[in-house]
Image 1 (cartoon, rainbow, N blue to C red):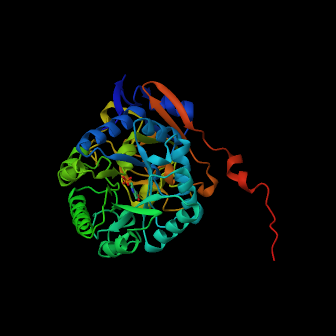
Image 2: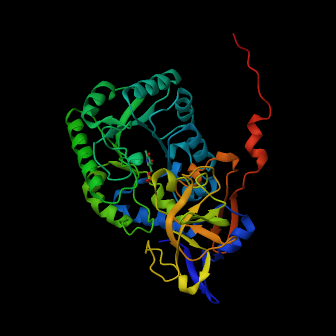
Image 3: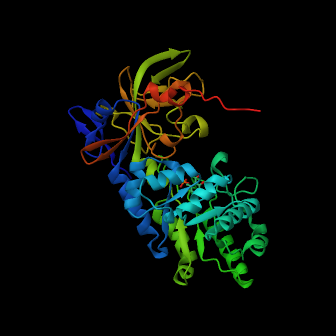
Length: 440
Ligand SMILES: Cc1ncc(COP(=O)(O)O)c(C=O)c1O
């Protein structure tokens, strides 16, 4: 699980991150703030590596889920590479000390500049998403007289049974090349001398709460690899993408060993014969290694509803309003009678009230939870929004001119601010000196 737990202090249940009370973190860092637990992050990475040990994979952390340099550096030091989807993410990975030679680069819209940057940096692998993109990478590599490696992202037309917005392995999505076109793709491009086509890439969506979509897509990929081998093409790399579930306290999430138990037997023999496996986990590593701490600014009643208006909103954590995602929310300190059971989505304790937890943003879509049973909360209370480490800060915006929140890392009882809270000056920094350009 994670290292955010409630313990009894006097008559209260008090939340700590590792050995630091959440209230103390909030007092020192301010709110809203993302707080990450180093022990949780380390444990998740180690468990994943252990579960897939038989495949000896290169674990490329999907930096889009949480790009903070200190988080990436920590994972890099544990041996992770990075999965990037932009020049900015490659820059982040390298700034965190992860060499480009451990990075894979997916994404449907790589620009010429981004491709050149990745080639110059010595990228490990491009995951190519279309014929035109392959031709463009090959052209740029040839012009630079360098050789690079690519994998074809195939779209296996497998339903990951997840939210429509994060479903990427079905035919109607913009990602990858239909698996039926893959052989033709290899026939056309598989012998390019600058852009070596060495692999197959899959990423069918996220989060995926059952193992069947992985089994189905790996089977389709291995069948394709055999057919390609029969035509003389060697596929030496299989990138399985990401999408393993994170524990959003929903009791639906398979453990990492459950995913591994389903996937490893399909690939172990091929790995022994020399196949290189890549994994691109994001949320399964960082989601419940992070919580978002927010203060209740005001309590308010409107019609039949009770609102807890907080200093964090959709600008800080977009997932509830964008995906209708569930995040467990609870006061950081609460009477023992309300000690939370994070597994029980709807706690049945007398005295709970139904609350919409909302932010300060001027949109009715600005909510963190709707009709949520909570202990009675009041102005000034600190709330913890759990499992917020992935696609939390990474999707935060400055909407309504709200400065981006701070990020902090806890290691035992040590607290480090790993991203300073933005100031108002930061909001206008790039607008201070308009630049007139020569036209016509
Ligand atoms: C290509 C690719 N790989 C990996 C991931 C990571 O997914 P997750 O964070 O669910 O593991 C994503 C997420 O969108 C992705 O697009």
